[in-house]
Length: 104
Image 1 (cartoon, one colour):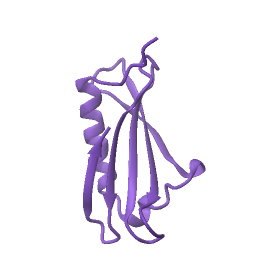
Image 2 (tube, one colour):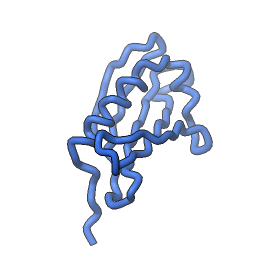
Image 3 (cartoon, one colour):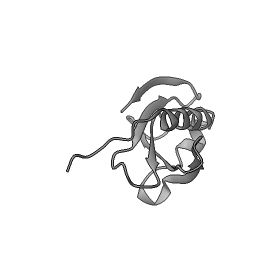
């Protein structure tokens, strides 16, 4: 069985909207989403009424506590028809500047 990655225009649009909201959070707030018990997890609806998504946000220090923060965002389809989420990662500095972003 082939593992399928979430790949559709609706999901891409939802991820983009959620990333904007998450990037607006300050470094100090994003730094609280570390460790398995502190992951930010919430549900969002898609543009298509029959599809919903789970969003997970987890952070990790790049080098040292209080410094740059690597933030991982994953978008999962709630139906579980697709096993691999859409992902994005960005680095935010203590002064709330985004210095790097990648998509997975």
